[in-house]
Amino acid sequence: MKRKRLVSILLFVLLLCVIGGGIFGFFAFRRAQKAKYLEAILTQADAKIEKGLSGDAAVIISRIGRLNASARQWLSLLKRCYYISAKTGDYTLFKKYAGLAVKNIPGNEDLWACVVFADLKKPDKPEKTVANALKHLASSKYDMLKAETLLRWKPDMIPGTAFSDIRARDIMGCGADPDPEKVELILTSLDLEELFPLVPVLWLLHEKPEKAYGFMKQKQSVIPEDLQLFTAFDSGHFDEALVLLEDVPEKQLSAVEKLLLKGDIFMEMQEYAKAKDLYKQTSAFIEDTIASNNAEIARLEGDSKNTNDKSSILAEINVLKEENAGLPSVQWIPYLNLAWLASILDEEGGFSYLLKAYDIFPEKKEILLPLGWYLVQQRQYDDAQEKLELFIRKNPKDPDISLLYLVLPSSLSNPERYRASLWELYNRYPDHTKIVQYFLWYLLGLKDKDGLSVILKKSKEIFGNAEWIYFYEGMLNSLYPSQESSGIFLESAKNSFLKAEELRDRWETLFNLGVISIKQGNLGAAQEFLEKSYSLLLKSMGDASPAHDGNALGSILVNLAWISMQNERYDDARKKINTVLSIEPTNLEALLMLRKLEGGSKN
Image 1 (cartoon, rainbow, N blue to C red):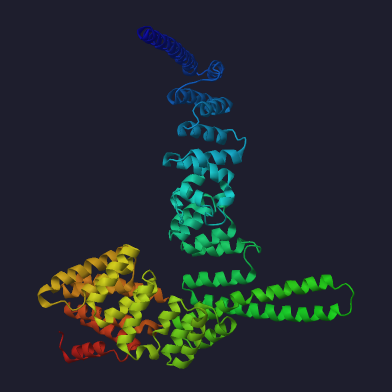
Image 2 (tube, rainbow, N blue to C red):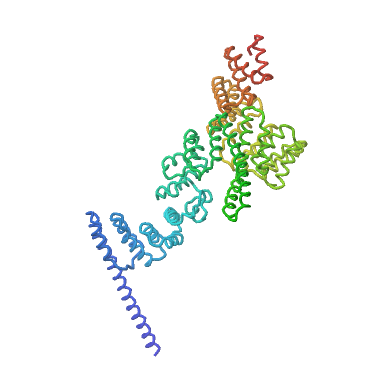
């Protein structure tokens, strides 16, 4: 009995296997047939495509209904659909089969990419397309496709100069700091003219003004006039900036702002007399505008007492009051610039301009910094301390003012405490370039090689290969090396200064290269470096009095005079020494060299 039951069970299982195998075989056969059918259709379509008959190929492919195919087969079909759509300019076919593909295989990213791309070519529901791109395109290979989708239908994600939506930032691979090269590539490839102004702004923010200028010139017709102006200005095309300034409409730049910018342009061109005149015009214009507005407000207030219709008069009064309220935000700028010019041109009156600016805007750090330094230099320590403490009470963590406060005698009275305070300030702000460079200069004065080495090593990690880091490396290696190793240190210093010079022309760097070349006995190279340094310093001074940088000019000329003496060009040496003494009558080195020349000692 048991045996019979066992045989029955085995026969039943065998029957199920036969039926299952038959069903499986049937579906496998159907699948193979469908694959052959799809292959046959695609072969026919390919034949038409090869003959340039894209329309006929589309008709053939349209015979295909719903498919239960593999991802590879779907992509093979979509490849033909895209080719036909691109040729005919109608992406209906491509869009249809991309949609069918993701219904058949909903989790395949490549097929979803086809859906998103089809929607870009044949827009239907933009919000849905954006959602699909963000949800289904996860790998980096579709970053550009996602970026294109967002930029086309979510331009609000890019207000002004920064990407406000974290998804857009990540998709473009920019993080919080957009890569201008990538943004330029995407926007130009999509031809999104409304976003082109973003590109020069990003290049300027990344301190690549020439890149910004190049893009601006290519796309000038869609770049706003004020952005054209600032791009030309920041890239050093000052003559063009002056022309562009005249074309900027009133709604983009007010009359006051135009006067200020014109002064700034002449300042950069080192035409200081013109800049000074424009800044004076600006301050007078602002004062006249405020006085005129106040007089008009008084008149309107008088008129309002004699009329029942006060609303229109009150509206006029409010407009004038708003204009007056906004003017102090720029009123201090011409005074600050006039103070700067007085310093450059070695003129009186700079302090009075600073005080005027401070009276208008006492909470402005840009005013307090130069005013504080001036008060310290004039030994008006109590006044400086009072103003700085007033600012620090409201802004206790401001690094610039904290640094200035350390220069007061109350801080300097104890050198050890002062040094400790600088270390504390540096440790708090190791990425603040002014504090780092001030501290380096301070340690250089102390000849603290260990301190310099520590800060330079850390600064390299933060700032990379910055010009000023190479400069201070050169200064460190120039610090009184021992006699036996002086050649090694001098060569290291020279290499650092040469790297700094490659990154930026600075007269101090060239001067140090000249001095090192003298020590190495290479007088030809020394003369070349020193002459270039002298030329660069004179150029940077513009119309300023030579006395403004007399000590620096004197140092360069004394070394050039010494080289002339070694080359037995005594008249040239005497001429240079006399130039030094005309600027600095008490220059000890020049006086000693002159005595040697007059006394017949040439060494």
